Length: 171
Image 1 (cartoon, rainbow, N blue to C red):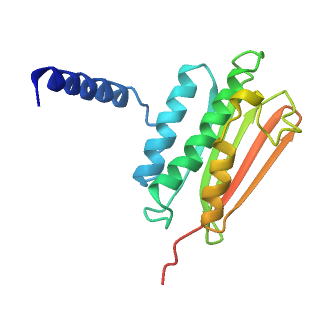
Image 2 (image 1 turned 90 degrees about the vertical axis):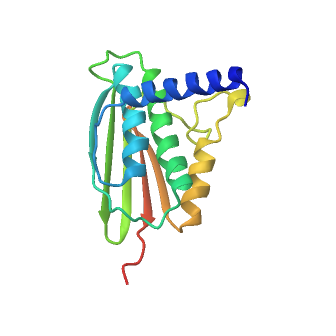
């Protein structure tokens, strides 16, 4: 490898290290993947002045592939941040609530955020037709792979998404 490529690689590693050092520990479940995704996203939300309420409990082993967990949690939180950022209300009124916990042999995930604009009829996507997001579709696909469930609801200026994923059998 030539010196120029090594310098680029070194700069990239320093940038990644700097970004990781700026991530707050907002939740700590013991599940490394959940902790990494959630703390990275919630730190970004916090830096945007969004109030956060997060509670998370998760087993170390879920039976869900890391990439699918990243798709589900990453897109849920990215969507919540984007929707909340669009709110014209004061930062005191803008919030994201996250709740993750094992519940009746499933992992229950709930993301709730402020959102005054009713997302219907475009099936809960506020992106323009040209910028239509695939995040909701990818969440649905990932959850379906595990025979889980997704429920979305908008009411009184609040948008909520619930996801349940079966937990790995403990036989």
